[in-house]
Image (tube, rainbow, N blue to C red; front, side, top):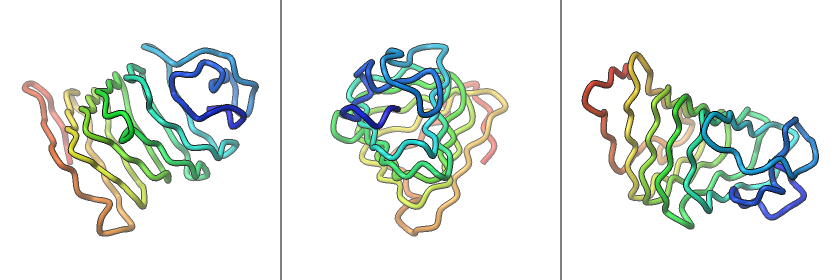
Length: 148
């Protein structure tokens, strides 16, 4: 995510191929790993449905990952690993085929559904706040094997 633009997921000018690089790399799609690093400080609004390989946010990233304004369904074929940001899931479904690992202070789950459909994956949630560990709806899909 490039700090110089509007913070919208669906804006190709917000994305760079390298940490801290110039925008214009295009919107991440299937097969792309998405990284929110310490060189970024802007929030990211998920204004389009995500379909990516993975999403990672390091502890130094202090932005807000916001899916609550648009309430869309999102798919991650690999892992979602968030180390610090505020995360607002919204009212859409989040399907994760990899490990779902949140180590964050604030989770705003909305009324959405978390669908875990991976095999031999983990669901991890570490919380520094009482309100950061409640999900509205969780489904472990048929055939999935998830350790908690």
